[in-house]
Length: 333
Image (cartoon, rainbow, N blue to C red; front, top):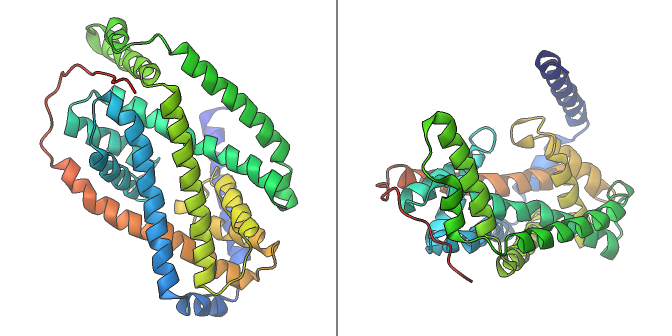
């Protein structure tokens, strides 16, 4: 398929989804939905905001597991950069916050950006891994809607494959040392040589930072983050005085994250509400109530982290850059 055709198909798909969302929006009693939001419990909303922020912050701890052996021992730096990156992700296109946090930490520590990028790649790897674990467990432990339950067997099979790949990755990287990075990259010559050296450094840094304890720690933290999101969904529903079982919040979390594969609108606003209402409705939640809860959830997830993240960004932008050309060292566990 040529690029022009692909672009037109993407625009047509987006237009079709937006048109569908407009039709869906016309079925909502917005007066009742806004009334539910207006009457929401401030205390429970505050608890949901704090929990969601802690969920974002704990991902900074997960990143620190890989940053520390790469030469950045500051947990505070990892957490601040993570929050700043998460906030910028909500205002920049194409997850630009991820590139920003690589730049932030590289400038602050002097660690080569290819190495910092390797730590981000390893850290982000455990988001989808944790999601697959949650999907497999949810399908086995709870009665989920048929649309999600059909993914139970594939999720279990995929989990086995992921576990095997992670074991192989750790095993294949057992003899890689920090010196291997410099042996592969050497001194680059010319533009192409620099590009090749950058990606070689990235690949070797990824393997140098691989270890069983770090992977286990990252997986545990990922599961804590996902559990935090389930509890955030629960608190948002409770704040709006909407009764939904834990299985319903789990199903809504899984469904909305599967729906995020297609970003039809900025922040998936509208699409998130549709998926949440569709899923929560299968647990006896009225559509108007589900819309109110979904709007609260998105506000909780986006607004506080964005405000704090954008406020933190100037600290990194105007921070004096650390010395370049330092030799990285991968510390043992």
